[in-house]
Image (cartoon, rainbow, N blue to C red; front, side, top):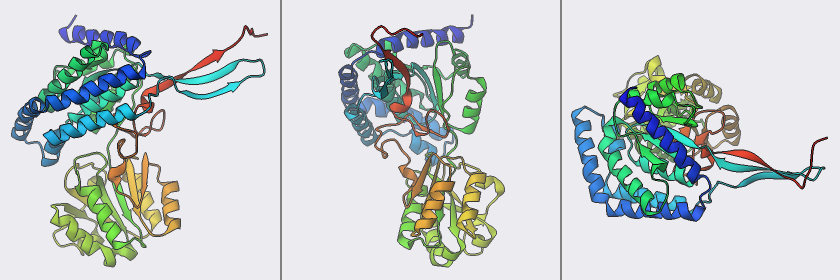
Length: 419
């Protein structure tokens, strides 16, 4: 038996036992743990930042892009934001035990559907160590045990954060193995865990396409996929100039290395003369490389020719494709062809256009006159998120606590038997 197999089996078995202990826990017990995590994050902030600096130095030496380094970076302010996010989760209702619906049958039976935890979650993610805290908090509050496998580039940061989580679990009397970190960068462990569908209930991969395709191919349990964020901003003919510029800049530039950052700008031909020169100038002033269709290339100084590949690429960098379209229908056709059903936005003053876009763009989130950056669990009032699902079943869009639950039927009777 291989060492990695033994290690993986221990992780999975410990998680299965922890999940059974977590499921019946009262909300107050879980909230006390969350508050302890928030307090310990603040108390150990300098220690966490120091561990993160090791990862940042290694990432810079390995040639990580500025956007990827930004995803990796932890600062005192970001740790404080993490602590506040944990405290926000405390304020959210515990989904476990919620009665989704109930009905009385003619024979007197009362039938209800009740929320229950998924069980054991295997969560695979890249780069962003803050996700370690988000995932742990959401899983435990929703009664799930979780095995965390972060990216190798964040291993020191994740170990420091896991130390906070484990110390808090022990202090509050919760199962020590409710949250476990894969404390190795050996990729074979991922394959071992994916083979353990008898112990792990669901896998959630959050990262690049190659990771998600591998997980989908190898997993022996259900997978909630978080595919590419090939997001679009479409500027309609009637769009307000200031609004169009503000939304596009925010969608692309606020944090270009995240999944809900826009990758392509589509602009109606009737709005081009009025909007495109000013918008291109604003984007370029922020360091955005514009990859332009033939029509827009003639209008944008410093632009480069777009390729077919660019339209279907999640750059996660200060790169944006630009295409002039003849109609909203052409914009929607482009999104259907090249998009990843993640987040797409329209900027318009036309109600008919907004309604058509809403009805015909089948993405996890459709934004009407708002930045793509709002497709986020915290911004949508869900607290932290474990990711943004591009699936069309079970969970879609930001996955918070309710998306980490299933349900069971509870039937209450008074001695009924079936005839």
